[in-house]
Length: 203
Image (cartoon, rainbow, N blue to C red):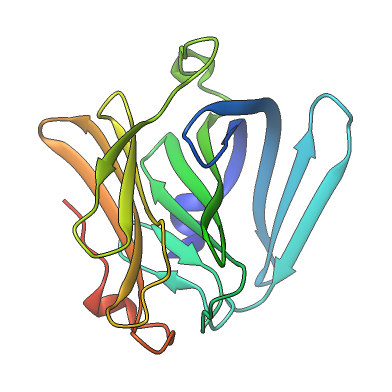
């Protein structure tokens, strides 16, 4: 299920935001996701420098949560008051949207939003403002906040680690009123990862 929706050649636009939702960096990459002899390999190439990063696995890591449609999340199995990084991905036939959330003991450190489209479909490259300012909305849980880009891409983070309640992060993507996608990754009060069946929802 994971490879069926995520494999292929992708063009990627990364935008990194500070804790106040202001864009502070932007760069382009290409991503190749392939499977050969049951080995899945993802290779990221930075277009400006030519540097590459690659990861390979036969089976998805235990901490990776995968749902119908190829949507997935990854990150630590347990979180504490120290730093942790979570990645969320939503898939469509020729596009993906990802978010990388960097938390520290005081809350969110950085948010990276990633727009991806198949290299064979350059017409799907997004037209974005020269600099993006995300809009902050209140979250549903104590300590949460949602950062929104034009009400199309919403990223929910933990502004403050909550030891009395669940800690959830989420990514939602609204392509139209009839096409909405969402992925949620939740840790319990003691920091343990809750199973995907209880925390992921899609439309």
